[in-house]
Image (cartoon, rainbow, N blue to C red):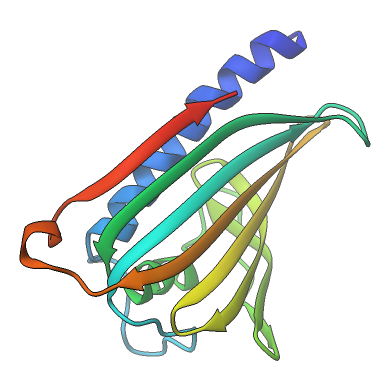
Length: 168
């Protein structure tokens, strides 16, 4: 498989990932278990998310595959509950997160793309970043999510979000 084919497949996988993540963030996760949740809590409200996906073809050569911005009325704590309750998928067994100061580190977390290394840095109950690193074959990918609360939800934005998408 050449780099162009790999990039095309990566874009398809990332689009699927974005849809799955949006469903988790926008809707409450019925699979998330409230009991035993020892992760971060965030204020409900209008949140702005910037998600980027980069592919590293060589150590110093980075290709931006996707950059997406979404503003939506959500409860990020529900998405965190789903992240922290990541079940095993096939042969992939999720590791328990390790907490150090304001960082939660999953050395191995299973999701639909396979095993990923995840670090969630909590800046406050209104701001966090999440870095997911995945190696597919010999080409590592890094997904960065920067999230911050921008205000309270209004009745007309309760179930809607504004988004813009640009693929590179």
